[in-house]
Image 1 (cartoon, helix red, strand yellow):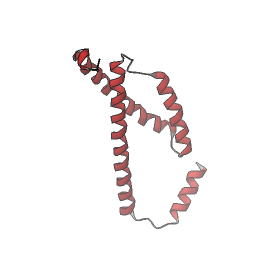
Image 2 (cartoon, one colour):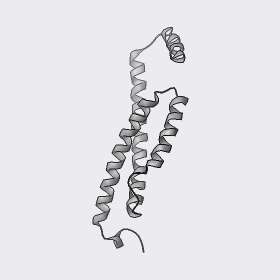
Image 3 (tube, one colour):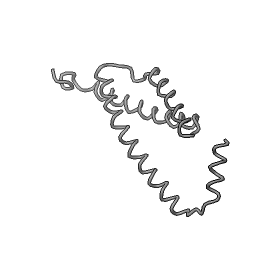
Length: 117
């Protein structure tokens, strides 16, 4: 909290242009959406691989490892770890639903049509 107070003290001494700040936020939001779309595309590759290899949709060991990494990042970037984990829980929930849909779709296709023999 001390670091946050220090940042606020510095900001409070500066002139703030609300429009510029909001424009910056919009640009960052756009970048976040681009990265989420890129993440989704990579995750679709993983979903197809898991379905083809008959792997479980959920990997709790990987999620635990990811949570630990996220907590480290939260500390590194001065973010609330609980907030960051909640965001990732929502991302993972969406990912798992996509992986389930991929599995269901691929289960309908004859196996000889999926992978080159």
